[in-house]
Amino acid sequence: MRLTRLTARGVRNLAPLELLPSPGLNLVLGANGAGKTSLLEAVHLLAYGRSFRGRVRDGLIQTGLGALEVFAEWEEPHDVRRRAGLRHEGQAWTGRLDGEPVQQLGDLCAALAAISFEPGSHALVTAGSEARRRYLDWGLFHVERDGDQAFRLVWRRYARALKQRNALLKQRARSDQLDAWDAELVAAAEQLDRQRSAYVERLQPRLAALSIELVPQLGAGRFEYRPGWRRDQIPLADALLLARERDLATGFTSVGPHRADWRITHEARPAGEALSRGQAKLTALACLLAQAEDFSAQRGHWPVFLLDDLAAELDQAHQQRLLERLRQSGAQVFVTGTQAPAALELETGASAVFHVEHGRVMPLPSPPPP
Ligand SMILES: Nc1ncnc2c1ncn2[C@@H]1O[C@H](COP(=O)(O)OP(=O)(O)OP(=O)(O)O)[C@@H](O)[C@H]1O
Image (cartoon, rainbow, N blue to C red):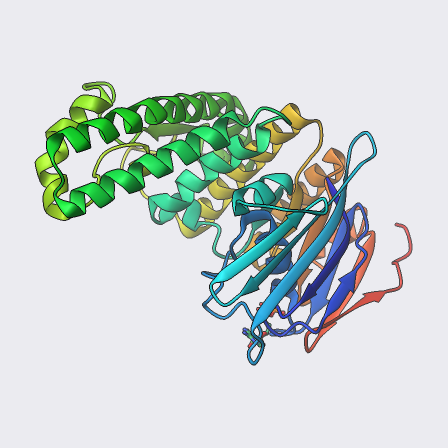
């Protein structure tokens, strides 16, 4: 998947922009505060419906403007050309995919596959569980083939049942009403959980190999998946019944796939020993690359990679290894930095360079081939 055109207006400090990226490595350079990360955020927004720097209402829309708009065109194998646009105004968003309005933001996000590695990425393995659930669901949303929307449908069915159950809990509804929604919740939950479990198992060998390569001192990494209830001891229907009194008191469903989580264990890391920040970063990178490899195995092409401030995130050897791997994969990559990462001099170099200054993004003449 390769972006061929990106336009954005109203994103942080960026002046209205039109970018024609290269299919290979795009280097985005500029001083601190110039707007480099904002450029990646614009792509990320289209691919995830959210920013990697918090909620849209926390400052993604340019001060003084009421709305932002991002539009992208991209190519997929077999000459498939697609386009998507997103507009955020106040609390509301509208989206278009291939010229048609979309009803669900998720449909838009499932179309464009981008993976971001940025200064906050270590949170995937160190912070709260929401990001880890989103990670699993990203994989499942994106490997659905056209015409097979099973995961999206199951996910929506579960989300709807959960919302209904929580509303009933808050009203302290009758048991028979809760019973009906428990049954609906369980039916969707079991499918959701089965798909997440299978996805994690499919990623295991890739994660093991990537973690040995990226953080050899820790040994092979392994996902330990937690479904959101003690599934090995009790069916979800019983867990919901057991939790009902507590849930009625809090007005919130305390067990189920919306509480799912995973963590990474490493062969050579004693249980309970925390990861350093650098190790957490590399472990998160191993997870993201495992996901990208799986995407490519299922879909036949790589997601777009957004690498924010790469030189500050990884040492030179890791930068070089990552860039070389992505180059070999044929992935389209965007790398930001105040200057070109040192690793690039040893590597094949960028295929396009953009300079960002006070929110203006300008292409620079292509560097000579190495
Ligand atoms: N809502 C907004 N409206 C206008 N400007 C904003 C808004 N939010 C942030 N900015 C400004 O946008 C600029 C761009 O920030 P961004 O993080 O994209 O820069 P950067 O080039 O990645 O910088 P660094 O190298 O320091 O990471 C900052 O100067 C910031 O103050």
